[in-house]
Length: 456
Image (cartoon, rainbow, N blue to C red):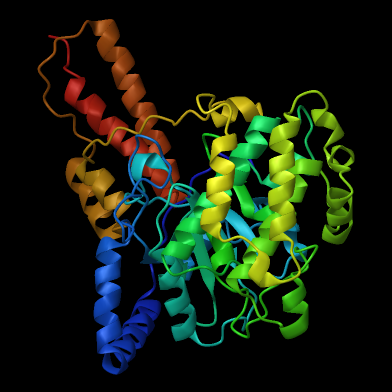
């Protein structure tokens, strides 16, 4: 899931799309004035949790998570290079019913230059009612926590249904646990993963979102610092019809097989299977694992790659917790607070950074690109105003501005050559409708004009 370095223009929304969206919004306001007011409030405050304690979204000392918003389909199509297969990051690729892409937006609202996003594209008619989809998305979008890969937006254009979340660049727990190449996840990191995910589940439960669909190793993602986060996509169903479990879940809770309903206790059962994954390094049927735990054969269940590098006492506590999560009777399973209380004391390397334990390089944030005011030509190109561009070209004839610096003849000659080359590149780019390159070249010409003085 490494990030490519390409960047895309944010394409303008057509007048037809704008008119359609205005009509949809007006109909919504006419029929739901109270909910419209609530949505306005949520837009303003969506970067804050209701308890006000988690606003950074796990970005350390950096800025906060972008406010929840609605994206146009045009924006997301451009960000994902027209939903290119090369941008797919979901484990099942194009075979999955709902595909997840990475994308990049030119969006000044995304702090610290974090313009990478994850886009989940639902199948056609998965959510036929746009109002219901929007309401579900808003419900998840108000959540903000450093243990969650937060939802930052959605798209509801026509019959298109998409969710937009923070992008996690360091793969999934499934990849690190089952398909590792250089090193397996060390024991202390596995304990950290278990704790962080329970903290995410406990937060969601406290905020009135106790249901999580398809909780498994694919839903645990690693951010730029190597910290594990719970994907927000599992907080929404895959479709409006209520079918909550997909083929990604190897072992479904027994009560779901009986009545087809997901409950908070079902989430605890699924977390128990994740604990088994962390302990064993492989998929083990819960019934088989329970038999071995009861027979005191827990060492046979442990990942052989951890041999000699884990605490038997700590492993016993985690196995006991897993067995409680996997109880057939939902009422006998622990709640999320019990999970946190049990796992928190087991953390034995609190000062070691996650990316070190994962054995991945530290993510270095690229410095933000300096913002310089555009020249009149650059501004006209950025607005794609062909009339203004033509007028500037006719009026100026690329006349040099007066400067204040005296240069030698050689320096003046070289700068004139540079300016001529930049001008030529800008003209070629403009003819090819490569407006980004044209802006850069014409801005370079303008900067050189300010510096050049003809030698006396």
